[in-house]
Length: 510
Ligand SMILES: Nc1ncnc2c1ncn2[C@@H]1O[C@H](COP(=O)(O)OP(=O)(O)OP(=O)(O)O)[C@@H](O)[C@H]1O
Ligand SMILES: [Mg+2]
Ligand SMILES: [Zn+2]
Image (cartoon, rainbow, N blue to C red):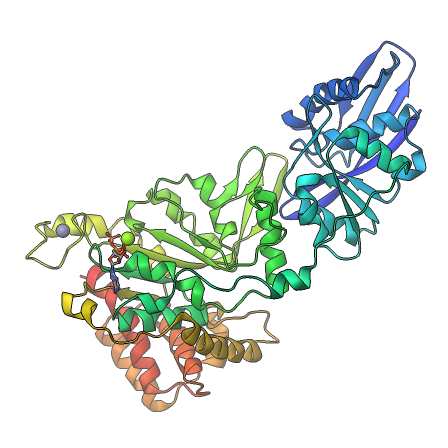
């Protein structure tokens, strides 16, 4: 007897349909599984055998062969337990063969026959719908994740016996339902943090606003307690609200990483701040059972590297490629895949190991020591920051003033307008933000008048700028002009953009 069930593997952030074939024949009693299986999938054999027994099935002593195809895709994880068990039960005649067509099944089995949650349900259900499946059977705990996908029914199940009942249609099961529209509109938009709580720091706030408008990477340098961490944490509060498509894109990544926490969709912009002891794999993603790393979990949001100089040098250097490509390619022995990584990089650091350079009242570090500390950030990495600012220590008086500070919502309104201007301008370009402009498109979209040109030329000579720095000034000036709702870049936009370049000269220049 032969049967075929459908399941799925995760490849990058997509679900890939896998067929699970079971064949039962006479011969020595044996249970074999083939089809390029990772170690967890190989162990499925034991889990399935015992779960079947403990669910009350006394299978006749036969030769059972299970094949997972396509054979060239490596199957990982525990989600194949349930489809393997179902394929075997079908081959033995406990389930009618035809009830398996157009049904996709995933779930991990415990030895007692209950079903445990698995990762990646959202992208799998999404792919299943695209492939024309009508139903998905998934672990109860993951059912709400699957139910956000329209046009396919998702059933949450808790035991193997329940799945058999469902497929035999012996009693009625109701597909999981999530009202996505309501979820989206009724979400609690109240943030528990707001820019209004940050006293003063006008210059830093302005630079952050510009950075968010054009998705420019930003580096903040300054002494301890100057509010760098406080400012960075508030950046997502001025980013535009997530669209449904963005929410879906982010949720797929979180689903694969197993970070959905019962919620069916991610509704807030990501803000990830990995500790400086993080490993390269945890930052970029990958591993034996592939998982997205912090840079992908920050997709469409903020990756905050606090205490940048404390990170392992080779760990932060790997960021250079994803910062250019907005995605990361992970190559393994027999597969390569891509995770999205379109994040805004925000970093903060002290200028020296004591933190107070160049304040000589507090800092005793020798110039060599300071240089060595700053040297932990390589020039190419430094070049990836379009905006570099100093966070200055606030004095008591500045903190005391009760001057009303602008709220995140007020800032966000301006950001949204500037974002729309960029969207409109680049609608045929396959880019969204000024920071994504290539040198060629800079020529087209950042045209300067003669006054502006000579201003930039003077700065170029005086500050001994590189070609890269020159392009970055133009991109930032474009964003500042957009915030001003000016089609033409003016001298004040250029000079402000130059300011954001002079800070790294101050610390890293000769
Ligand atoms: N502008 C400000 N307005 C209100 N509170 C502030 C401001 N700046 C600093 N603080 C207070 O000081 C605390 C320390 O700030 P924060 O941790 O952001 O400093 P930091 O620059 O990250 O320092 P470090 O270099 O030590 O990490 C904040 O939690 C906040 O209470
Ligand atoms: Mg800090
Ligand atoms: Zn010092």
